[in-house]
Length: 180
Image 1: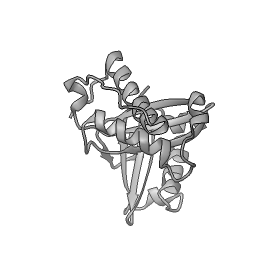
Image 2: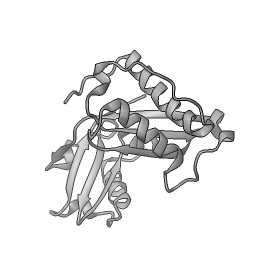
Image 3: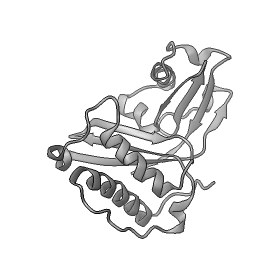
Image 4: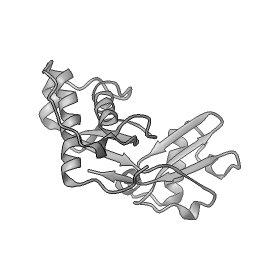
């Protein structure tokens, strides 16, 4: 599984795939035919974040590479725009005010020592007692969190007590993301 950086052209194509998928559903448009290079057919995890005037408007993703990257981006763009349970579906009136951000994930690495976590470089995924939560690397930076606050907020997102990361039952994973 690749961790190589995407080229500017690959990023442009992924953005086009996300925009086209949302526009197709929002405006009942024909799907734009996009030529996708083989490099974007690799199975990789990705998130699509939609922001309206800088504020979160939707964010959905797959943490692991279940599908080819182009298909993942298409699927999660639609989910972020229309099915994020925290927000109503995106409306036509909002379309000109939204920005689409894509985060392509590296594979997860289980850690034994929280000192391995680099705020700003790593995202966190914590699972324990059947609960799990994930925060992308950019979230800690946006909120100015240190390593402990990042761990606490990831636990809270998982529906766990904020200090659950200290438990021997907690599985903590780090990953990086190429965000564009």
